[in-house]
Amino acid sequence: MASVVQKYGGSAVTSPEQIRKIAERIIQSYNDRNDVVVVISARAGETNRLIEMAQEMCPRQTGSEYDLLISAGEQVSIGLLALCISSLGYKVRTYLGWQVPIITDSLHTRASIEYIDPAKIRADLNHGAIVLVAGFQGIDRSGTITTLGRGGGDTSAVALAHALGAEVCELYSDVDGIFTADPAICDDARKIEKISYDEMLELASQGARGVQIRAIEYAKKHNVTIHVRSAFTAERGTLVVKEHMPMEGVVVTGIVADKNEAKIAVLGVPDKPGSAAKILTGLADKDISVDMIVQNVGQDGLADITFSISKTDLEKAHQITTQIAKEVNAREVLADRNISKVSIVGLGMKNHAGVAARMFTALAYNNINIQMISTSEIKVSVAIEEKYTELAVRVLHEAFKVDQCSE
Image 1: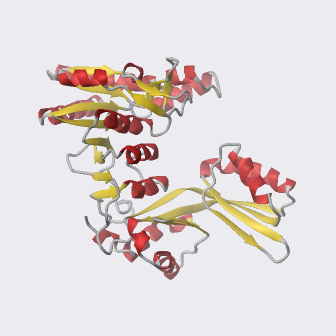
Image 2: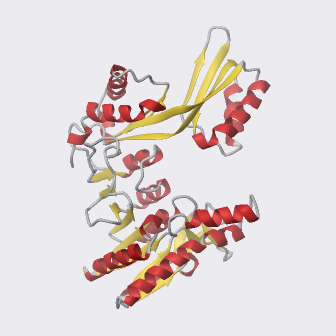
């Protein structure tokens, strides 16, 4: 029998009707002669409810007690799903993370998986049981419950797939797969049948939904095939696999936009060593991540430093930057929350010249001004005025003929 690990996100287990449908899908996979291990997230909104409760009662608390609280949502989910599967006449076995055990380090709220002992799960599978495991959680070597942070459920599933030698890790959510662009923006957006780990990492880091970055990184490291699928249809989704040769002529695999972007410009900074470092270090010390960075040096010995951050960090980042700007004798600090980031991603960029020029030309032709640029070997990102986001995505989708590509 083939081993399959399935993971269902919180949006798939929000009601009794949805839980029953998920149970029926799991049973169908079992009846297709698969050994089935299922990872379940807390119901949508449940973890946030627990976090809000903790913050209301005891603000700014973290640590082992905090992890104990916010890991409780998954226990409810696997309990409800187990009852449903059992009521349909099938043997089921449930595990919380510490019962497997899933061994992690001791970084509470953002722990990393170190090791999974699959022995008990294998024994249950050999006895014909469907195994349910709570995602997002584990236990450190001192026996304390930990949580894995953002993307923890997906990471739990991929790690279990690796530990069990499963043929595939199926990630079910409310998206049908990975698309060449957001279907809500581009009517001709196409579902991608197969995408490489690196392309998926770039798309996810730029805002694409479907699978979390940490899970992709783990899958790439251990060569685990991921199948991104909808929990509400039987259609195939998108396979995330080891790098493969792209179809000849395919330059761009997908286009993604992120409106959670803001910009800060520090004007008139003395152009001497350490000025930029002091600004960026001050932000890093407060856990504020900087994305795109542009520095322009003038003839008067002053420079302008512009960088992008998330909108949620803008207020705090503006305060920190303004304080540091005074310390380095900068002239002015400007903040702008009306920007977005649009990115093109594709392995084909490695072997094609002029991709960035083609992108910039298409945007310029449509009077879309580029404010900042960042690149990697398989990605080009630009910051633009937010009101042009959807237009930019459609323009680039057409310019690179992404809808006409296929595997």
